Length: 287
Image 1 (cartoon, rainbow, N blue to C red):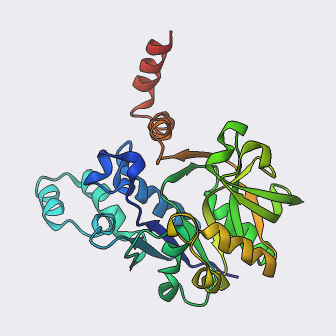
Image 2: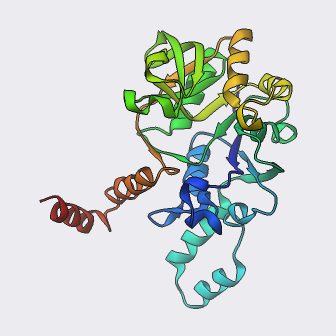
């Protein structure tokens, strides 16, 4: 079982980050000085992914343009001898092969993933949601791929969340299958706390098998006319074993304003050029 392709879903309208996302796709919003989607692509490449399929809304091509040469800018930097900045600008162009798939209407995450069916073909693949950014000792997706290859089965990323956060996520019912590994026996989308089967929430990283596409195509639209990936995952679990892996590391929710700010602080403190001044500032406002 080799995972060569990853689907990045970048077709949302970014309503949680308005007004910033009115013109700029939320996937391009930066973590410090790097667009969020570049961090996701770098995670994919570090996990062994060779081809990226980006699902976008019609006309929303800026996400892909970031990974294409900027000839005028590159020429300007080269003429002025700014080779260090030039290398930074050119780096995204070399990361991976890219394919575009379009989601004509915002009909849910499951529907968005389905649009990548032709590009993925008949092989296992990853799904990555750029709202979720991870800071892990090993790439989060790489952790999932390792578990998926070992079990020859699909695997989703899991995170234990506070009880107050449970209604925001898909929550799983699960039994222990190994270190940090769980066999999933059920899922509930955004349950009330008292109805939740656990505190393990599904995060935006998945390693899936191609039979998920058939289930997505057969799926009936739910609330708001959307086709949910969670419904297809539950159907998949009825056919084959489906696992969840409680990844090692930190996850930031860039679709949430507080999470977006937390990511700037968290990644800023890892930067030698920023950390001293940032620590000094944080101490000054909490003292």
